[in-house]
Amino acid sequence: MSRIRIPPGLTELLQGYTLEVLRQQPPDLVDFAVDYFTRLRDARAHAAVPPSAPPGDSAEPEPEPEPEPEPESEPETEPQPEPESGPVADANSDSEDDEDEEAPAPSRFCRRVSVCAEAYNPDEEEDTEPRVIHPKTDEQRCRLQEACRDILLFKNLDQEQLSQVLDAMFERLVKVDEHVIDQGDDGDNFYVIERGTYDILVAKDNQTRSVGQYDNRGSFGELALMYNTPRAATIIATSEGSLWGLDRTTFRRIIVKNNAKKRKMFESFIESVPLLKSLEVSERMKIVDVIGEKNYKDGERIIGQGEKADSFYIVESGEVSILIKSKTKASKDGGSQEVEIARCHKGQYFGELALVTNKPRAASAYAVGNVTCLVMDVQAFERLLGPCMDIMKRNISHYEEQLVKMFGSSLDLMNPEQ
Image (cartoon, rainbow, N blue to C red; front, side, top):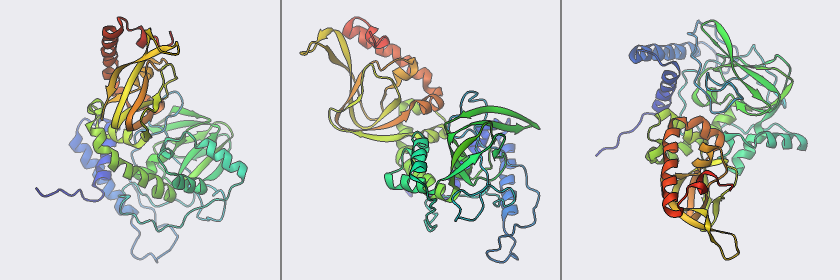
């Protein structure tokens, strides 16, 4: 049987359309598709540089009327309360072209040509751009590393990639009421918050409303860079603050390429996980973007009973033994003996009980032989696995039945502290 080849750019094109459908929920998908792809075609035509323009000319062409771009759906980062009701900010302010400056100053008079219809295939883009390096003091480097410590997009980078990202980031100080990014603008930078509070504002139907805030942590601006869409919201500083920016070129060269490789590795596996089969394709793609991979040696403890839960695990390869402390059996040292209650194999998951019930770990998990797990942190778990929550809650009663058969009680599961 001949193998079907997917044309370059098709995945990104359909992905953008799918996200818009999920966000706007149009009553007629065919009419919406005609309108959506017509706007993309017109925007691409308007963005083209006139043939008469001399090569390298930095002047912008005569502005032509463009259809107002639709904002993207939620980005992968989680704002502070008032979530879910609207798109999280995806924005930025433009930086000047002078790369000699350590922190490029934002400019509203030198906009990039629209990229909302630009197809991007990470595999086809050659790595010919010179590395961007903004010198930093030791004190700045320490502050930057701390700000980036919990950024999901950076968690799957190797040490060399992370070093290049940190080298390329620049500090931007903001004042009260300063617009960091504006809805509808093209994306030039990804931002990590070091300190400060920020409002997320979305304009729709001639009305502007707040859909959330950032409070001294988080990041924004990735969607416009990953999917070539206009900024989905406006970000305004409500206090003095400090941001770390990463330019579009470096972001795409390292972050987007890394995510594309990770997707190829994990997509088919994620599709085979029974728990995730009920999710839409776009929802599974978001999961692929935020999961990490961890390896464990034979006998190594992955989670411990009574510990605070911070992650959810899916077995990618190998076998994991789930054990619980018995209240009726004592170990040789006088403590409670651990009894195996289950084994998890490829495609099965564990660690969800504590996240669903908001209690400490109810059991311990150990690697049997060499084990590889896909790991998702608690923030991503709560944000992306909502549609699977009912399935996981149903499984709690199944676990209880197993414990009743083994111990005559389910208290070990529901009250792990006792």
